[in-house]
Length: 591
Image (cartoon, rainbow, N blue to C red; front, side, top):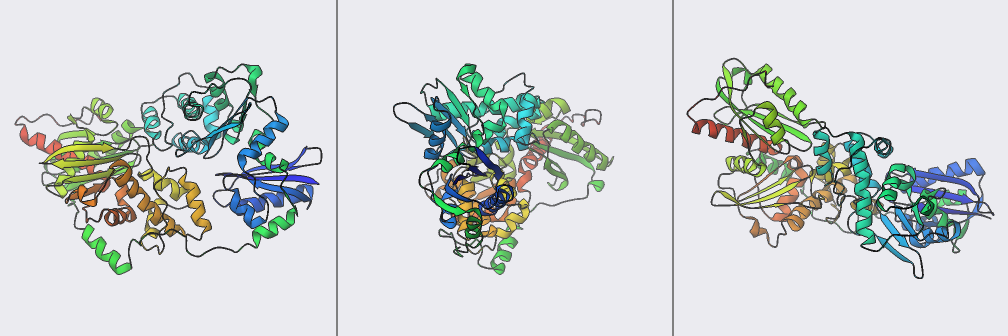
């Protein structure tokens, strides 16, 4: 009888079928995009079309396999046992296995006693980490591999957190580093994370086998491991089909069910067991539309005036916030009204992007007005200031404080959540008294929600919108961005809707900010006059979750994502008014 194994990983489904002589008759490696059942059925139908509706002896394994095993009425085998079985049968000379998957990284030491180590609460340095980095380079994982073949220099990149590493990669892109070098550096970060996190000082020696999808598809990632560990060619084991080893182990397992392939498909297609309400739910964000409308009216009060730039005259003030991924520009008049604003992605070219925006400012600005002073803040502060002869540079925290105090005079706490970073600022007696930043984890930042919206095929705005009236927001905790994929899959199986998931993620962002970054003990520790800002707070679900968790009504300015730039414009105006001598305006030639 043919033997089959199914390995359901965090991102892929692998299916193998052996004949009686352990020759592979059929194999597939497919991404499942969180819909495990559909992907598995598709692959099994392909198997029937290739080898016929065979009765097979089958078992299921993998991090996402237990639920599928229940539904398909097939025994489940633990993936460590499955992988070990395959290694011992096909490559018994192995001393150490390094295996990378979508969300997991494993290192297995063979010898007198089998020892396996696995990543715990962080999925930095796994396949999903590489996928996230590939997006920054506007390619996919295979594209990163092709780029890495032409590298010359390795840059240090943090691989602790998939989102946080963007903070290392983005400046390299911004500064014009070769994509080939960045690609190889990403792979080196994965190697460093795997060795430091899993070997933890234990020597990796002898015959070393490389398993798992990422190490199969990415030759340059393997090469980084080989060079870093200084492995001799005769000690490198790169077996055939290493991406299928865990599925092969399930096929070799002794505890198996005998089923026709069509029976397995039937069991999967006819499973309707699905509870309608997920198990762990949180309070709804809004009871009904009326409560939502009243809440929106309150927040609309914290708005700024706008005036027509073509009617401006006299001095105007330019504020620029050159962020890691976005450029924000504001032009204000002496009354603080906005004449021009821009908020957009810098496409990895902050200087060129700001130049284009300033050209647009000059196209619209009449001869009756002049830019009296300019100020810049953000990641690209030094570059923009030097290249465009901007009058002043200011640290981000001061720029944000200036803007927050404008909207809520006497502010005593500011929370700023951006795409990758989070800042919590306490204010005493009109001055910043403490600043806290997220360090190694960004599961409470904007890209966190954006990543999930994309994975569920939603636009970020629509994703936020459906959360507002969700009936059963799910409790997703505040774990690592990558690991939470598995949690989302679990609640989807329990019947959670996209609205429930979106609302739950909004709570997760805030709980991470308050409990992990600020380490809040009691809501009163936050203060009374609170301003929340940063692009993430344009998401009304996140804003509402903050008020519910903190038990505070807060001010969210209408320009929450432009506060750094607006603060710079205020600073530019204050400096101008303090100085009696008028410096020449920024000339077009500079731009």
